[in-house]
Image (cartoon, rainbow, N blue to C red):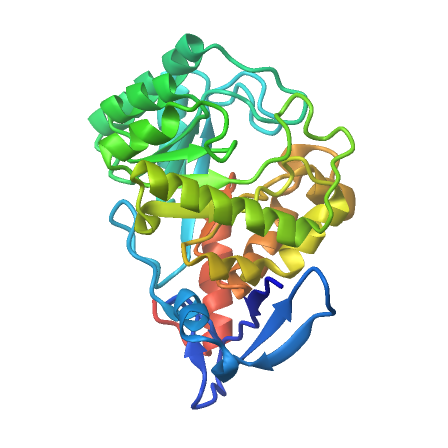
Length: 337
């Protein structure tokens, strides 16, 4: 019977002498929750784990695109689309995109996307997606913006053009299942990747999504995709995992993932959470308009950091950076400035 190990992260003063660092980050743990498909969850001391189980949880995550993970990282969302659910059209022109990138000066990574993946969205032809994204990436580099750039695409042709223009990371919402040429391209180019879980595609994913156990099903998918990427030549130390909040998931599915988010540290790779302005935030927080969901988005991001999540993908970069600084200072009881 397969068992799944979820560390129970803690932070702040009062750390026990036997506590273990979680993924080389800012949280620690002494106990884990053991999950399975055939038995009730059980909590046990981390000292009872096997060597490999413990190593996956405690091993420091390798830097990605020059970024280490000893502190939380912010990925700023820059959609070069006319129809994204929250900011569609806002950065559609190159000059507007540059202005948007400069406003995200606190972002550690800029995530550039040219195809909306909101529920119900149709696919964009690769040539059109490339025409939207590559010029923006090239302009960012020419403007001297130093932050690593991620290309948010499912398509090898788009990713190749983005990498040629100066992108550093490939972020595929399909988990590298949409275009069979994309993973080999990333392996050949030696670039880091982000593999995300989604059930279905954007045009159909919110039509009655179902799971046997959403937490364990998503974990198994990501574990299998990490193995598949490794088989193409993409080493685990160049992979980031994202559980795909809102991609083929109900509110109940999203909350089940968020409440036990630390499980995904057992994958042994850095974790990314992209929940910013998603529909469930509006439903729970009473904010129908995506642009009104900043407070709820920040709250979810901070909850993710409590689980030790290394990267939060957000629209509201300055507000999130301020919240993280205050969260860290109040948890630690000191301002490291």
